[in-house]
Amino acid sequence: NAGVMQNPRHLVRRRGQEARLRCSPMKGHSHVYWYRQLPEEGLKFMVYLQKENIIDESGMPKERFSAEFPKEGPSILRIQQVVRGDSAAYFCASSPRLAGGSNYEQYFGPGTRLTVT
Amino acid sequence: AQTVTQSQPEMSVQEAETVTLSCTYDTSESDYYLFWYKQPPSRQMILVIRQEAYKQQNATENRFSVNFQKAAKSFSLKISDSQLGDAAMYFCAYRSEGGGGADGLTFGKGTHLIIQP
Picture 1 (cartoon, rainbow over the protein chains, first blue to last red):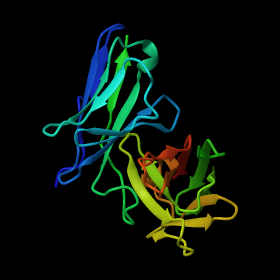
Picture 2 (tube, chains in turn blue, yellow; picture 1 turned 90 degrees about the vertical axis):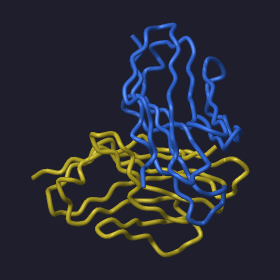
Picture 3 (cartoon, rainbow over the protein chains, first blue to last red; picture 1 turned 120 degrees about the vertical axis):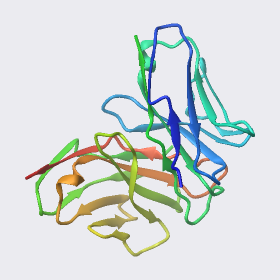
Picture 4 (cartoon, rainbow over the protein chains, first blue to last red; picture 1 turned 180 degrees about the vertical axis):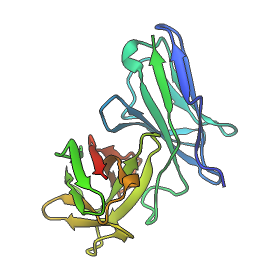
């Protein structure tokens, strides 16, 4: 039973390029969350998606960042025109249950470390 | 908005001894979930223990237990019989129970746990 998968594990981009981070949730999970971890910090929530819907994007920067979770395929976090401040670890988590489920848990992937040079 | 505070950036304990990591949080909600996650050098986020706010009984998972004080908004993690493999960053996290899309976890900044052999 494969866990949450993220790729690539490491991504290097020059300033101004685009970064695309992929997340495949655990089998049977239809809820995906993206978090960002800056050096020496805890994880910060960015966005919560269900298949084909963005449910909560309150943590997403207003510009350059977007996320999708299509009906088929992985969830994508896209960062346009990257800047050095975007360098961080980006984690994806998935969940099998709707909000309020009593045994609700988020299962994390191994993260993608983005370095902007 | 909820906040989670971990006041100990680093803790050190001798192998086989007991250590307690502190966490406080601020919320106006009555129903919520609290979590402790472990992040070893591999950076994989691993769920250690979970507590539902409506449960008075403190959660326990083998050598890991919590002291949940709802009125004081305190959620400390006790690790008994510390092992070298326990060395990691430990993050306290909060999640609303009420749904409505507010499902992202709010994390503290973490405590770096060092195990002395």
